[in-house]
Image (cartoon, rainbow, N blue to C red; front, side, top):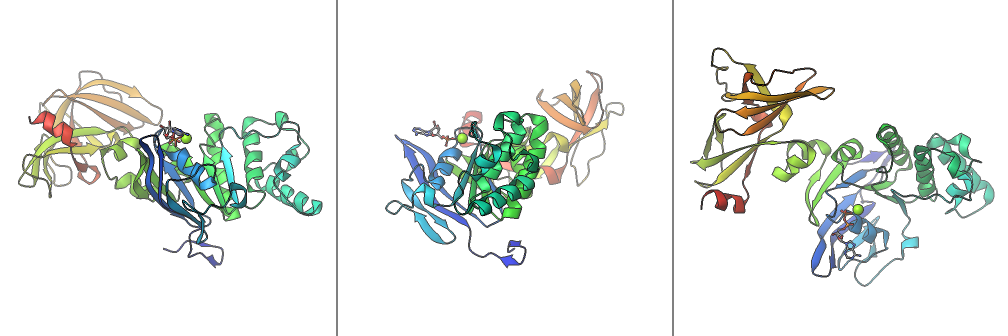
Length: 376
Ligand SMILES: Nc1ncnc2c1ncn2[C@@H]1O[C@H](COP(=O)(O)OP(=O)(O)O)[C@@H](O)[C@H]1O
Ligand SMILES: [Mg+2]
């Protein structure tokens, strides 16, 4: 698919990084990271704290230099290990959590800060941007007269004022309270799209990435482990950790024999697994199905959902738009968690039957170390 904006068809990435590496001491903090972002596109670099997201961003901004790899803007090299365009000439806008507006300057002066050219033009640009972020009325106000969310929007307008070709945003919303955040995220997104900027947004929050990103690059220990549309990352995760990063998970373990793995939930196809290899079957709590106990019997097995296994309710909690039920399984005493829409609060001690929706199960090889521990 070719991304389009208005009538313009872009074929060269606005930002491209190739094989970027950064080492601190003997630790490879950014390890062979490659990415490309088209104008008007938002890519989220998503990963746990300490995985190398900010370091990647700092190299693109030019405040840190990579040990290997290249950075291109609109197809032109701006930085490798010998050649380096200084940060102020990269036309990159930055936005961080502590965006610090200048307290002694009016909102208009804050937004105009990075602008050059005739006063009238600067004023027009400031007015346009403040309108766009819904703050036209704040032009002569001082930052301390604004709420946190409003200050954040001014910071966005300030970053966008010089028409950066790229916006780098490092956890920009994490200082805002929850109620404000969703609204500001949506507004920010629509402003960025109108400006046709390429955006690299760093976050450790899966919800934020799902909400904002055209594409997610999932990062772990300095590497990008998976990259794609939010839908694909969520529904075709590369490994158990990638599933677990987005939601609670249940893991059912089995051993593959003849490309089949027997479990209390029926047999799973495990092509490509060695005989004796440990298999993790991973399923999210919302994809377990519950059924009532009929005098010690559960529902009949089906092609679609396999076999049911019995569990005893340990506890059930109402979470708002769903209920979370925890089971102790009869077959091995393990705990499985299921979520059910709305209100479903069976008494502790109630026997229920659980099935796994086959099309929602992910099958992964268990980690080597684990396998060795289980089969010494
Ligand atoms: N200038 C530095 N010197 C030494 N170690 C650093 C430096 N900057 C970052 N690190 C380390 O690199 C790792 C990745 O940091 P960072 O990129 O900030 O992670 P993230 O933004 O994903 O939380 C961390 O372990 C951090 O302590
Ligand atoms: Mg960081």
